[in-house]
Length: 389
Image (cartoon, rainbow, N blue to C red; front, side, top):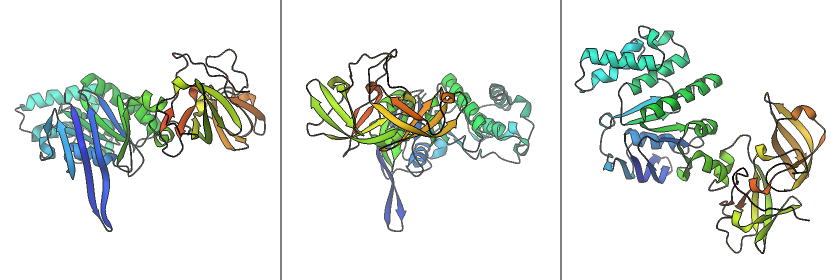
């Protein structure tokens, strides 16, 4: 296993109008055996970061280290890393067995032919592709090709696994199956891994920790739970979570041991201890809450948490998803999105009243967009928010 560290890494490329900064002063630490996901929109620098870890790009500034040893000048083939790409990158003229064993035969590892064959057979059995060893890639399905690509990385038993959107070319159902298999394999083998994706659901599912990038700059490096509940800023909050977070302009006023928070003509109180570092002059804020946290009722009696703002609306669109639905409603200040289970009870055009526990509301400074109040898990935390008059 390997501890991976990036220390103030910057990567610039020459552009027609000057330097293009793809990665800007990035510092990350990934412990032995951890599964890091690099997440962000297209062009944010996540693939460039992965390529610098793998030795395919050299940092302009900063250091990449494995177990404290600087590897900037070590060529990719000598770093003992295995990469899995989205296009599978299989040799079409070789059989599955030959593809799996090719890397071992190229390396000066002292393995005899029979030892290589044994390792190939073991990995093929692990990935349930043992009956495909004599087939060529052209006869395989997308999922089978991806298993071969994974097997080719696993068979080498590298120091690091690097995945560059390995599931991008698979259909939705197969993506879910394969991401579960990748997660289980990585946990079983305990090899430090870095995984690039722009799919936040994929990231939240498989990661031990997530590094979110935007415009080449690290926004947050944390566990999936903390990124969801305590995003560093409004960008992270809006990028992670589906459907998108509801966002409204609001104000905040200090009242003794609590704050009065107002938005869209509604107000409620929240205890001071739920807020993080609040500057004295903060009054203009951005209010956010996730569709999953809204309830279609005005009363909060019988559930954990305390009374929150009451929001009257008119249902506009209902998007059934099986057992629940995404519901878009119109309010005076714009559109409200919620996720409801009992959606069969409502129709488009109906009036509906929503509420949300103040514990679940996010508050950001409007100017800096930094978080000053995150989502509190009401199953484990007791708070004393009350509805204003």
